[in-house]
Length: 123
Image (tube, rainbow, N blue to C red; front, side, top):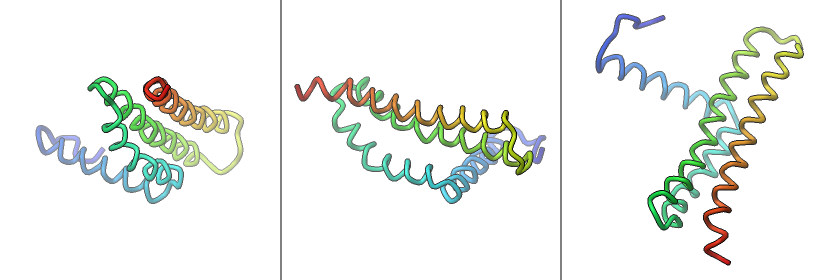
C-alpha cells in the first residue's frame, strides 16, 4: 500500500486525506448518502437544541450520525461486491441486502431514539 513507511503526524495527515476522498466520492456517487446528509444538516442543530441534558444531546446527535456512517459502510460493501463482477450471484445479493438492512436499522434506531426522548416532553 502507498505510504506504508509513513509514521507520526504525516500518517495522520495522509489518513485524513483518504477519509476526505472517501466522503467526497460517496457524496458524489451515492444519492442515498446525499439525501441522508441533507436530512442531517437541519436535524443536527435541532437535536442540540431539543436535548435538555448532555446525554440527551449526545443520543439525538449520535443516532443521526450513525445513519451516514452505516451508509458509508454499505457503499463500501456494494463497491467491493460490484468489483468482483457484473454477474448476479446469490451471496453477492445477500451481502448487499444485509448492508441495506443495516442502513434501514440505523434509520429506525435514530427514529426510536428521537421518539423516546422527545415524545414524553410533548405529552
